Image (cartoon, one colour):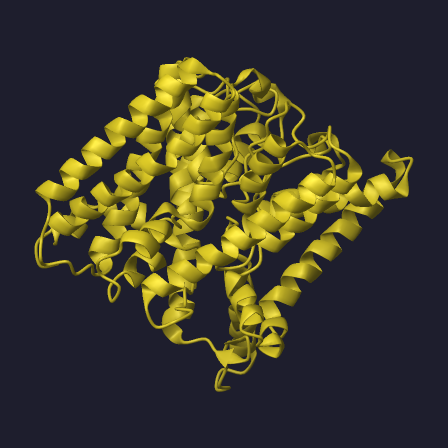
Length: 483
């Protein structure tokens, strides 16, 4: 185990985080919010000092990062940035409870969007900016950014990218992991800037455009208004809905478009199944909710926005879908688990896994009828190897067991309805945000206990890192020498 390289990388991440804290500090200065200025200044300086100290004390010539180190680095980094990112909320007094601040920050970095705030509009501009900026950082991953900027081990950094990037398969876009990370961020920044421009064109104020672009790009869903996106005009709602869908697409597709491989990009089966799923679910909800809307345009917009928001695990809202019909709510709950495409900023199981699992189940049924028939699973025109099939099946099993255990503990701990607790766990585990029961706290997690908030924070981290890194980090076997 290369402990020095682990701590050196964590130190580098803290230095990167200290630089990121300068942006909300500048926003606080612009709006003359002195408590926020102090909070961000203290946190940034402390993060930089600790990062420099860790980097200096753990300097080593043996810079190799293997799979085990990659998993541990990712887990520790996400816990550390969540702890440090909580500090400004506490120092400023905007969220006095450290548990609540930690929950809010984990929710931000993991792009969940779950909140303990019942009145988000009382926050300062600096805190609102930081809250949404955590979505943007976490969407692509702070480790991906660190690899792109400060990586010393380009040949081994793919272990970090694989541990942090969502989806069952993470391919290198180019031979070096460092270059892959840079390409991903260029695409990510480009789409974010384009969204900002379109929001500005629709009359959204500059500050609002920036923070909503961050929340949409990271598929996070932290809003700056108590009614989320409902108060903005229809053009802005359509733009955000479309871009939520776009950020749920595998970023490999955008890379292929950039290098003009249009046939390969638009030949992606996952892409078309993803679009078809959104269209079909939107149509079903429109049929189910037809009698509840007086205007067909409003019905289509509300249905598409909600489907796009939930399937991409963003969590923005323009309508209270907790009051919708049972069929519509069931569709949205199912989409919570499906999630977006592999290699996107969306959460959930990922559409790729769902497709592979369905194909595998179909093959198993064929094998029962024709035991001697040779059955193979194909995806994107290629044979899915046995290791990938085994990995997908194992992940689903661990996912179900983890979800069931967390739901049992939360249900034992809290006296809210089953719908509230189930959707709370589903929302946090799949990095979505909303609860389908206002009795638990007006759609927020404010009434959950300290223990439940910590457990749900753990659930958010489990979901964002796709279980393995965090679980393996807490297993003693991982830390044993020569294992």
